[in-house]
Every structure is written in C-alpha cells, then in structure tokens.
Image 1 (cartoon, rainbow, N blue to C red):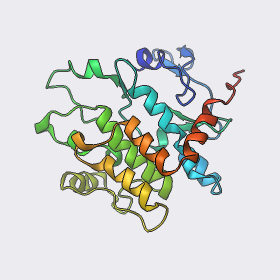
Image 2 (cartoon, rainbow, N blue to C red):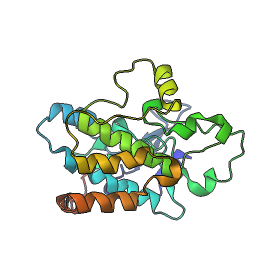
Image 3 (cartoon, rainbow, N blue to C red):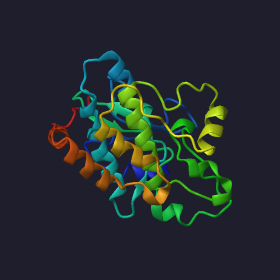
Image 4 (cartoon, one colour):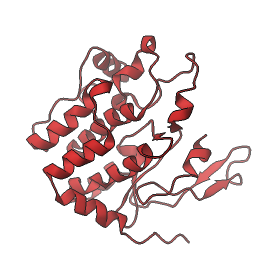
Amino acid sequence: QEVLIWSQLEHPNVLPFLGTNMDLFPQSYCLVSPWCSLGNVMIYLSNHPEADKMEILDILKGLEYLHTRNPPVVHGDLKGGNILMSDLGQCRLADFGLAAMMSTLQTLSSSTDSTRGSIRWMAPELFDYKTNSRPSTSTDMYSLGCTIFEIITGAPPFSEVKPDIAVTVQIMSGSRPLRPAEGFSDGLWGIVRKCYAVPEYRPTIVVFMNELIKMQPDIYNNMMASLDCSPQVIY
C-alpha cells in the first residue's frame, strides 16, 4: 500500500518516490527516495537554532496537497521525525507506511485495527475502540497541531510524561498539550489549539492555512518561495 500511494504523489513538500530495490536486503523490498543529508526537521532545528521556525510551516502545503486529492490521502503518522529537510531547505513529508486513501479507510471492516501512529501525536478518538474511529484528515489535523507544538518547543507533546502508556491514559482522560511559556503568540496558539478540538470542530487544512496566513501574511510568501525552489539533482 505504501508503494501504491507514495508513487502517485508529486509535490515539492512530499519526499519523492524513486523506486524499489531488493539487492540490499534479499526477500525484502527497499523503498528508494532522495537522500536528505540535513535529517528530519527536529534534527535540523537542533543543528540550526537560528532557523526561523515559522518558515518550517511550508510543510502545510504538503498536507494540503494530500488532503485535497481525490480521494484525499491520510498521512496517518504526522510528526517531526517524519518531516525531512531537503538540501534546498524544503520540508518534505515522508514515511507513508501508515498512509491510506480515504476511500479505502471508509470500506475497512470494523475489526480492522485503526489505532495506528505515534502515541504522543495521535488523535484521542483513535485510542477508543468503542467508537471504531479510523485515521482521517481530521486525525491528521490533530497530529498537525502536535507537530507544530513539537517544532516550536523542540520537544514532543507531553514530554514531561515519560512512559507512553501514561501518555495514553492522559489523552483518554481529556488532557491536551498545554500552551508553553514561550514560543507561541496568542494568535498562533489560538489556531493550533483548534486542532485539539473534537473531530467535528477541527479545522480542515485549507481553513487552518487561511487563518494562519491572515495572522502572519509573510508565511504565504515563504510557502510560495518553497514551491519555486528548483528540483534537487539526484546522482
């Protein structure tokens, strides 16, 4: 499924799929993509503390591309570790192992395990087997809020809670990431906090981007500059 979905995607903010290889690990397929020497976005920010974290939000264009396809593509595991930095400084969505098309998700049987992803970034409804919730564009939006929190603060959501099982209990009890003491303006936190709402009240990626651009028009220019970057040469 990962190959099927990933091979159909083409966008400056989505890591390109180059093909498969069975030579490195016989009996297993290796999925081949361009090498991103700068690492993921969290490694990049750690190595470049002077970087403008708001420019990192060009990744929103990648998520918009996924969610506005027909049918929409759900990433399913959005977090800083799955956002790679190209040598040109573009953010690129990666790791489509949990991605699925909405049309496929809607036909899954109720017995299918849908609580997939990384716990600290997972939407609360995905922990509740009683609701039979599945990954969706809405759960991606919850993860987006957690990912922006991670990018701005440099730490994953609920970093003060160490065992993942304790994080699960907190999320199911209604806890959500709290506004940090530094890093978030009132406007930015107000937009990000909407991602933590119940599913029907979370913004779509288009609404989220529009609100963000109204608050900080320069973000739009940064996004457009990212899309205008020349393609990376692969040797």
